[in-house]
Image 1 (cartoon, rainbow, N blue to C red):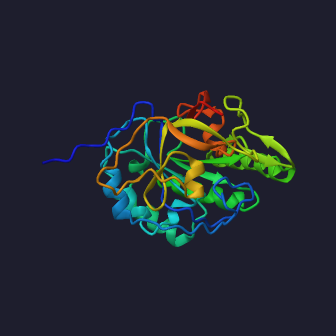
Image 2: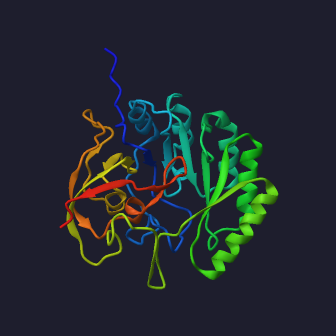
Image 3: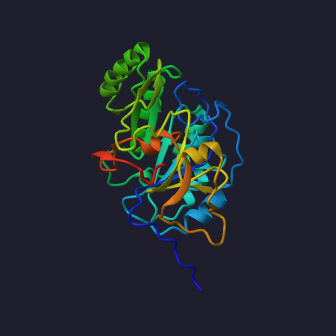
Length: 293
């Protein structure tokens, strides 16, 4: 008997597969470094386990499987996962693209560029530029190499309010334009010189607070950690708390429902900020929160 597919709720807008939280960079503003440990060593399931679980999902045209991290290319089965997810599932990649030559050669040789293309207002491979950690000319060279090989690639940078970094970001825009690489900006979300950055107008005092409150919360995203655990929010993912289920479990399913939480005030900013949706329209928020007390 053919196994039935797992339906993704209509309200969902994002599927994040955090293949690893390991990273080859150590950015001071990294929102993934919940505990300040940039090694982020976690149990990581195999590529075969990822593929087996994700292939059970019912495809949704506008919701790709986003391979994320850390740096997802550090997962030993990164290419295997790309090549073995069923064709009906679109794939996006969030990467710093700061790969060595061996990794580049292997990727270009073994991955079909058409596997990473879809109808979208932005590139399927989105490389992040971090001025304090990267040489923009090397990054653009890497992006250009993929683009010339037929891949859909763009570079994004966070507007970290350091004057030095803003100057480098300004330079990066011109370098990318000259090389024909799509370059876009993302707002900085966090604390810089004791000032809070980010639009939290929908859920005020939801992040960066010393104390927390109880609430009911539901999210429009499927968030899967490196060990295959599903979490109700990014805060729980990085804190490694409140696992809902594992994607390897026989009874794995995806639900859109309110869940009790006692961490309002210490939410992860990515969940509660007002941002753009997948169509790049401003005003979207990943979560709905009620009964704050």
